Image (tube, rainbow, N blue to C red; front, top):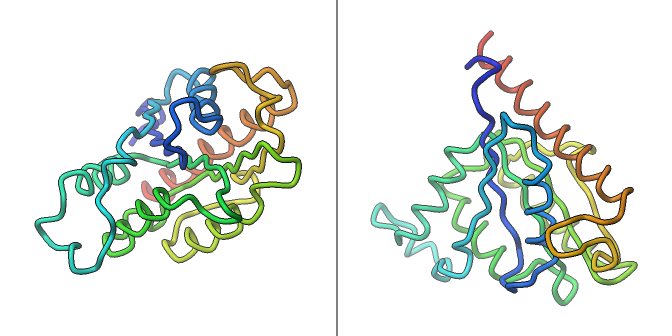
Length: 189
């Protein structure tokens, strides 16, 4: 792959709410992504069946097959999630469970953002997801992790209004793009 090859980033919001701050964060990132980045926000989280190893067969549900294909076809993934009851929202954890046997996240550059309406929230979901992504063998660095407290004060629709948060998101996105470029260089050598 050459440096002009578009970088496909697949983004997943851990919230099913239509007016989710986490989905808003992903849309904001898409708005300031460089031109060589193709940004897709996943919209099928609520269509995935409940995970069970017995259902994880060659004839897997079409929504699961679609999720896996989108992860496989991406150069990187961004997950932005709220914390729910001090943990990972069930729909997001269900989606990740579907990727365990397929290995779709193995060596995949990943950015993890946790956003909370509380000043001290999201750290527990963030920590739990870091463990999950370690088990899934995703590539996460210090620069591709971010917790955003009191998120509702930092957004207006799909626009990040807080300058510090905007800069943090741009830094995270740039770090993720660099991970992709580094991975491409290692593959070419």
